[in-house]
Length: 461
Image (cartoon, rainbow, N blue to C red):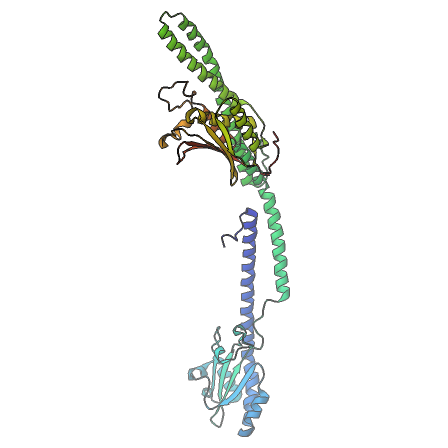
């Protein structure tokens, strides 16, 4: 049942509406059948008097040996007659029934000679009837059972049976129900489609915003609840854009302003007579300069508005590996699948370069593979280094965090490579993660969402 239940809002509304209509129609049909049955039952009880009074008088006027023939002649599909030595209505208290008293009055006999019992809704005497063509639900139900004492001591037993079976769903009723269902589905589908169209645009805009693409303010249309959700999304997007722009400007200004005091300190250091102290100060200033340059590069990367395009990710990865290999790095492409993703190619190339350079710097070599996992493209960069302690796997993504205690620039950078790579991945709706390989070394995984129409082909960027 859970698998059959529609997943879309329009489908669920249609299903609920159809379920409600079907339930209402079934209740109406059941009430109609029940009322029709008891209307026929009341009519049958009224006709008992009209049929039994002439029957009893005719039996009284004929010889006993002719009674069977009279019974067969008087019996009708709605009235079953039989002459027995015992009454089928055994309770004498039923002689006080109004219909029994009426029969006794019409026949001019004693009230105790007429007994009557009405059937319940389930049909007390239904079990005594034979099934109609083997279908229990069409079994006739007894309306009333009557026992009338005859002058010779025998009893005339009569059972009033409705001739009309319980009505089935007639063709006009089924056709009406089908037309009503079609009209209901059309109306609900049209209404929900118009009401949820803005939600589809909102979902697409949220997906694009999560990938870092520019999104124009959405038109606030549709029902009140949808308009409020769209308005909230527009406000959120505006605040996020303003926050990111302010942070980027602050970072760029801070990196730019640090250049002047660093240059001033470098000039003063040159005037020192102590060569050892001067060398240490200059090395520290050089490291600060590299940090400032990395910060400015990071700010420029955040500020630039490179468009997002569908790109052949396999070609991009292969080109990056070839470029770094030509620069003398021990890097090789070990696996590649044709994958198309919507990315900023320059930004993703930089993130990939950072991961490969880290692998070569700390793990001597890098082996790169591109695979498809579900709705994601995964670039794996493996090295043969010592790995990273499990409790430090997330800490290394923080800006300016390095695990090298010496903080020497000869054994590592300034600590922005992984932070930049993760920032680029998350701007595309992806992620960068690190895991220690069981066979040794570290694996960095760059995950990016696939394009909607993911077809292998030449790069479009």
